[in-house]
Length: 367
Picture (cartoon, rainbow, N blue to C red):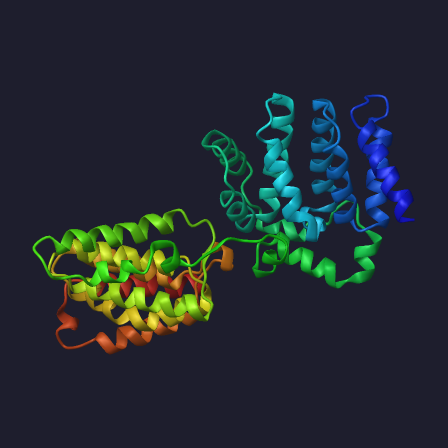
């Protein structure tokens, strides 16, 4: 059975670029995917096309692959998703414009179904700037449809229907939920490791006339590094302990003697919070929310109060890769932090109204 399906797949791929045989070859591939797990068939398709030099053959397979995603759903690719995407991204760099456009069409269709996890995977790849720009435009032109997981696809695989669990997992992946990481190896960054251990010493350095410049440079580096993080921060035991040390160091800069560094510290904290998972976000919140709430209410400069509110916003919103929406765990921490900071002086503070408005807006969004 495997020998026959493999041979049939290879033959069908070879005939896709024949106008007279396209319909027959396409139907043959769809039929094989109906009775054999699609990701296995697609892997054989890619293996076969890599042995063909004709641009017409590559264009034809890419056009067929887009139809597959429409008819079966992208999540049906399951365990071959990552390798298939790597191949499609490679085709985006082809000189033949028809092949390139066909690959871009596939990228657009995949993004519309898979959303944030797909985008994070793509941006983690090392591509030429010009190719990345084309890919990003394709994703922008075909925005993520959260309802894609609920679409009743035209064609289904008998094998997947009988296994049950695979289909359930596939739907989760279409939605861009946590389960999508089982199909796509999403990038996770160890922030301290990428910055170097000396970053902590730079942030807390106070000796010397120009030490503030080093503190500023260090926090700028944190923000710049996070801006290039297309996935999430690593929060395993070792990485999270290092992350807590970094957070503590930056938190101390919320009261920096150089007033222009205080909003920078708030932005750095917000950037870290926006790249952490739900549980870690709440844990970090316990360490920084009281200081941020205090700054949002009591700081003399509006730029700092606004920066603190922005950081708090990042702290209670889950990353898109973590499901998006309000992080209720972090929200509980924020409310407790706010209660702890409501002194008599805070009740008369210039920023209290903004903090209350922020809380009201957040609560309204989850009602």
